[in-house]
Image (cartoon, rainbow, N blue to C red):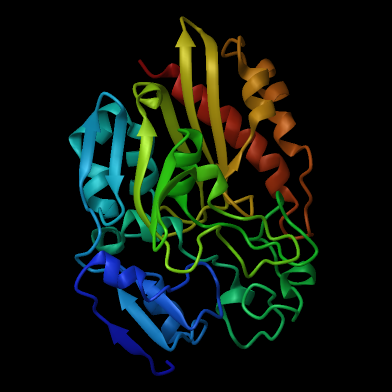
Length: 332
């Protein structure tokens, strides 16, 4: 671990004045909250900031349900949100995604804001023994393209990076049209969660749209996303403490046995949480009939590209959509 200074500001405004940067690997100053991902990266010498600015005790940790929907403070922990009675009742997709994530120990510490900003588990990013990783060292190449890429993305990739986004929570929030509240030196702003993460393109080391000094302060989910029939399906190599090979977050507005509206997002396959609007449009008006669901799910493969070891994900993600829709549609 490289040496760094730890700053403990007295309030959020003082913390923002440090103008630390999130989602940029060579940033000299970074924020730290729960630290469950950050500490690992510091230990592995992937992150080498000169300063860490602690957000402990400075961010909202509330969980609020009201007429406008659900508001999650950025410092609320995964464990607190996952078992909150109102979340379980009105937005079970969020609870399901959180409980499918990490371990109880990590969920007790990790925060909502930090979860959205966690870094990829691509082995070529997290192991500094590999010299070629454009996300870790811009311009060095992407070892995953011709290497072991079973864990990597098939959607939203570029010739510079095929690293997958790891968050389960972000996939569920993407399906529910969540909005991210951001605070910074220039004031506050809100953006759709779908716009928070960048596609890799030519600059995979730039992962989010956050400007220097900006932090996530809260996440809001609109009321109309509550009460939908939903399911979070996570395909993984073992039953716990494992990241998704493929996941599907589904929320359905049902009219009897028919689908009035479908909201679907995928994880484990995209360089960011991946919404599939063409699949959703094809599901609208459909009944829960396997052949029709498979036909609609096939649209998720448009634009997908496998890189050898991960070719199977293209078919698997279609099957995951169908299964998740069937499970969600059968709920009462």
